[in-house]
Length: 555
Image (cartoon, rainbow, N blue to C red):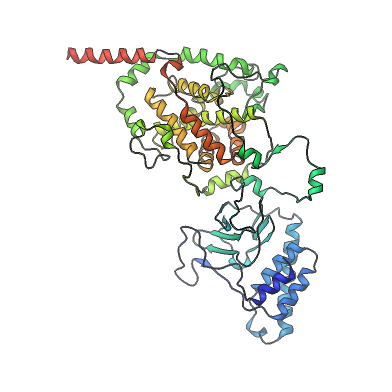
């Protein structure tokens, strides 16, 4: 911040950053002088304080100088020093040097004992709003500053550095409010360009990553030969996935790694030889018999063969006849359908709401999980890989939605098994490249493995997946975080979290909201017929009806 800005702020008698006229949603008004939101305001800035600001600007560390100047503006002078200009200058100077020393050491990287607090970032037309969970801090020791796209916050023992893609401005409109009861600090930062849409706010890993600003010449000189997707950019956000391709079960292309004798699997098939030391325990969390030996081109055929062996027509007929419990599960209102009245008869396309949950927030546990994921770069531009990853996401969400529905959203010990064995992506490490093939595989597994096997239940779960995706990227990411949480708690199934869910939770943050919305729309168009699963479902249902009628006649 320039000296002129400091002087203008001093002359205007602006308040320090902590003001109580902005509160985050749900924050209660303070009930007393020592409760609720902490505020501090600086008095009219005297000439001596401006002098200290001049010296601070000349220190050399502009970031530390800015932080120190802000701190100095909030210094409260002891009553015994109010009459002497020299005493006031010395008192302020001691605080100035203290904060300069502290801030300089922080900027040199001496943050080993600092804690990255859970946080969320949202925006309105003119501001970026950051909410941090920082309990037990002293409001008067809170310090933050803005430098173009860089934001830094510090209050012992917490430190947070965020790198935005668009510019902020420090012009006196920045505000903060702290709620002692909840430990929530809400910081409101003005945008340089009012009305500008800040991108990448959902990608928390990218926001906290350390980046160096480059000049245009440096950026051109050091640009890598392979462009890497590390955040949302215009090309990725506007790029449409072409779903209009042949929808057959055998459409998976040959994996080049198979030609080298090393079958790959995991997120975007980036892993191999992971299961070699786990041969004795594979059956606990995988159905594919030899994952490090069976190439990707054979997995689908082997899976279908084993599913045919597992298929039990009597179980299906019994669930069709004695369907009281299943009908209750179908009528259950899932959390992603809060306003639905008759979901079992609703069209999937009718469930899409592009504006739903636009300001959905992550809870503290979800924020900690996102921040704890190590940064990872993904090669940009391979549409086939991206399409396969989106199909895999649909498979995971189908298994998750089935488990949520049959348990009516009550945690139980079989969730990890349900999620794993209902998803061919997890239990067979299979890749898909069109939506119908992944939905047919998901339907088949929902009809031959779990406790409840009913066609209407499977079709409703597909609508559930459409609804989850239609609620937006944040809601989809929250569902993936829940899947990761389920798998992480299991001593067998946590391997799938390492191979798939960690990457899905990272990658989804960089996927555009438009892509998720398009995926919901395309999935809503996919129609699965009973003949697609290759089992005689219609004949079995007709036979079940005939048996019911015979029993009624006998009675």
